[in-house]
Image 1 (cartoon, protein in one colour):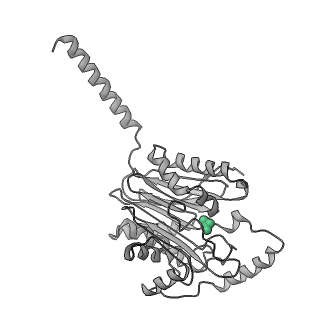
Image 2 (image 1 turned 60 degrees about the horizontal axis):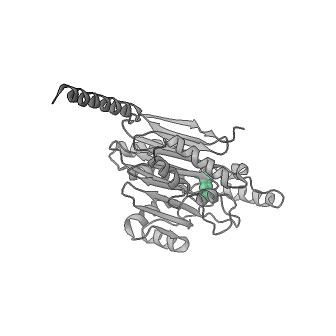
Length: 322
Ligand code: SD4
């Protein structure tokens, strides 16, 4: 090789190397170890259990199921599982879904009398060739699978429902206040595999038969093991209309950070939903590298993050600041 050609080859190699290292610098440094992210303050308790499941050798799918079971089993939580707020006719009807690292998912909607809908959703995923069961069919399936029929309406929620029902004649439901605390959880194990879950009693005082975003794959939850995972909370109709969680994951696929992806989809919903200032919608997102993000329309959304061995609740940033 003559010396000029040799010089050109070497400098080309040199610039390739520096471009390569620049690119490497721009990549997020992967977080080591498991990362568990969930919605709202009860997420802290759910994360703690989820982490314990992983530490005891459970899979990331076990972790997102058992983690949110803690909140489903808590009668004092008004928006999930037993003690969940009833619909306008006084029935507690639950929605939930779960999704694993192999793109498999299961879901139940409008399910009554079973306090762990997310576990029924997992059985739908694992023991049927379907993704989603609803209403009586979902209940019969749950009973066949060994779940126990229970009274989900507690004395406390019944009293609160009666009071709310009386007020409804004079006052419309306050969306932002009444529909909080659905738990969505997304997690990554030490090997980088992702799973997610979402469970709720849905919007308080909803019409009987109404199904929200939480059991809809792509709306309340989405997981793509090549990219990341996202979950939603808030006014489900706005989330469904915009395929919320699937869009957050899709934006991450195209290079957005989890935070940027959550912000972009909240902005999109605000641009498209006429009455956006009177609803709450929040997203959490996690990518393959273990980076996380959260964003909401209204102030007050919180999330719980278990990372680097610490489990901490955080306030989320929001579009409306007051
Ligand atoms: C729903 N998205 O049924 C649920 C409610 C919720 O926090 O997230 N509450 O529309």
